[in-house]
Length: 304
Image (cartoon, rainbow, N blue to C red; front, side, top):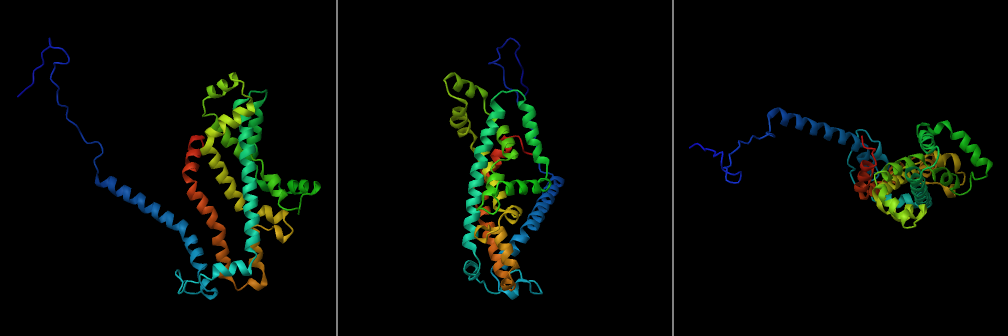
């Protein structure tokens, strides 16, 4: 039965023609095979990255003779949980952990504070030479730390900070061009009308930064805090260069001295136990802040 259309009828009275639909996303064998191949590659790549961590955790629960035994034993014959008690009694883990936490928290706080404050100036305050100054400041990211490592050490020595608590690392890492770049990119995504309205209401630039920009920049602040905390926690060269007193050693330099100790040459399992304890806090913080980290990186224009 055919449907006829009356040209004099209104649009509401016209019968509705049935339009054939086609399935655009039909699963073909080639597409299925390709998807399976991608999943297999991802699983292999993930396993390649996770094998060292699995070996580290497994070795932390072995006896010393089992760690480098031949053939290799991926699973210990008996789980020696006592290793996680012995590492605290045979090494100065408490002091190392305390120093690392203090250094990481202080540097992270200062980096977030100074980075967001300077980024607001570059993003919202207009002054002569702003773009040139920002470009020159960000260009320091491309300079490797090894290029100015010696001048920094000479500077810290001249102002007599070397060997005094954790001050050299705090002073050198409290400011960073990467944090300024990250926060500036995020500030520019916030509508400038908010700042203009606040200025009309009599709010100062400091008040706009603290009461408007900072509360709206949670994801970027979390990303910067996470990146700074992980970098400071895992830093080895800084403590190696500037720390002289063992009472101020961090986890990384402390585990290295424990490995070099002749009395600890046969305590390989405890060394792996200390490595697990060093990695565990960073892994927990990253898992808890992963959502904010991804959101902050994506919205700041840094995604690849």
